[in-house]
Length: 241
Image (cartoon, rainbow, N blue to C red):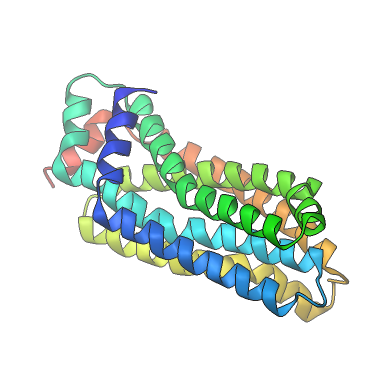
């Protein structure tokens, strides 16, 4: 792990805003999941619980990442530390990669806490339920697709922050991104239900896994084309404008 990533992780973990956000989102996520399981205890539907569990993971990410970016990468640019790195011959791609990895790792923390506590909770409820959910093949496929999605989105947003010149534009964009992302995540299920193409909960899970992979590919391409337009001079000069 390079020094830039270590520094960002240390700085963010010492931030009260990050810790408060981590606690609140974890508590709300767990409470929502426990409430759902409790209401369906007598008529347990593994597929439905899995889907709900997946959606909580996704919402966790899109809610937390704007805050994480504001605390870490946005502050790096606002403080001039990003300019300092570039002025001292730190490679731009290396810097973007470091920011992307640190953002991704920080985004994983609340999701990791949520999944660990939920797994323990399910074990206390029923070993059979735990096996059906935790050891479900699509659970692992989803986690892998979610991790890919998280990393790609992290890099895309980092590149956009590097491009933006005005702090207010960055703050506005991050706020809009969080709101739009929550709506976008619910769009497939709402649309497919409306036109009658969803027949069971299993198809919903499969659709969302494919949806995450497609979105990851799209934003990977967007991040690539945005990044090739960036160079040290453009970023350093943006501080002067």
